[in-house]
Length: 290
Image (cartoon, rainbow, N blue to C red; front, top):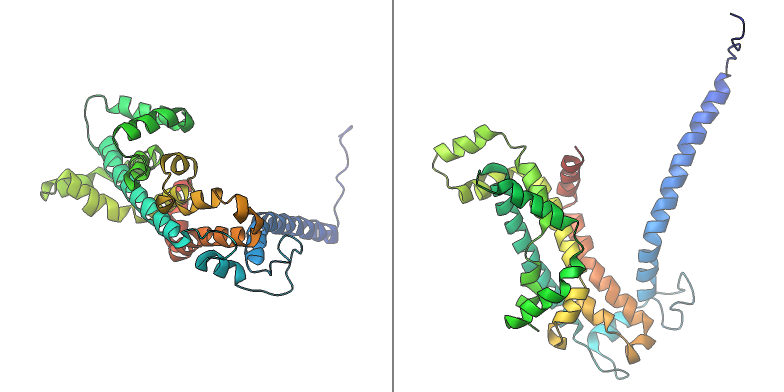
């Protein structure tokens, strides 16, 4: 027993205080993280509603007004009007079209890679994995030249078609479809369903949560796309809202309230979609994290 340190009993009160301190520290870090994440959005919303003489001068304005939104949407005598509502519609068209194609492509290709057997299947899968780590900006110039050669420059299709395939969506669907029992697929084939019928009548209903997560992420990614839309479109009536905000220089740069209002309008569709599909979003994330 020589050389062994004596065991000292820790008082129960000290143990309780340590536990409270740990819990308090967790809550403090959580609140700090939320404040850091939310403050820019809160600042943007407040200053979109602030009187113009208080924008960027007071963190919390003394009163709220819709002047920035009226100036943005109804035009102004001080600057040339911009097609903001048209830009919002353009963003919706381009994002919805691209997201729909990416999800459908991901479903079909993911099913083929996980459930069909064909020569070169593993090679195709490895190429997809490799491309996921390849910087997309390297392909920007070749893609632009191809789109222009096809006559899609300055068109909706020029913005939609090059964004119609998402390798990440294919990878996610492939991983999920591998978890579906083979007996279900075989039973559907015996019942006479084609492979596409199995995809849309069997696999898709079973993958609603993960499909919701993938769709929301693809939608958010496409909705916030700037670089490609900026170089592929010159017509102001075809510009997405992101591009129109990015071109707000010159006289528009003197009206930060309008910039904040445009940014809030750009954020609203994402927020609405998240609130509508939040239940499926949580379920899908639980599947992803398993």
